[in-house]
Length: 182
Image (cartoon, rainbow, N blue to C red; front, top):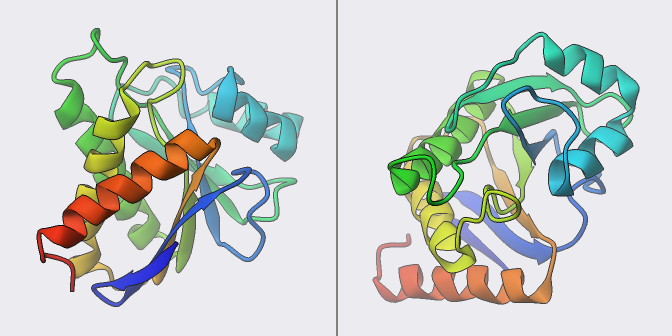
């Protein structure tokens, strides 16, 4: 699915976040120490190679909602933005922290003058954030923040499963139905 929102191409696709050639940056879910973890973090660390683990350690620790940026190393992307999502039911207020994740991702991408970025469903794996709520937060932040983008021209949400894809598309249709997309 693809549409233009505030002059920015928004894509919602199913795929592997580590296989997004042609984009400046991918986003990885991160743990506090920015170490190789499970899920997206593990996939990104394996694909980027061992140099990422060494480089990322310099930027730890990371609190929920915070982001850091490293080179992409062996990935087809120049950069990786590492974002620590909130642990649902543990980090409060979870919705505010998840909102901060996405806002900080977009802010850092703009600071680095990135034109394109791929983002997974932050905090929905090991952190346990409900997918539907996470999708609504992610797309709401995109809609709001994209009005201020100077550099970002393409934002791709890359989702692992068909279920995630359907929930993100549903959340997008809800926003679109509100007639606030331009």
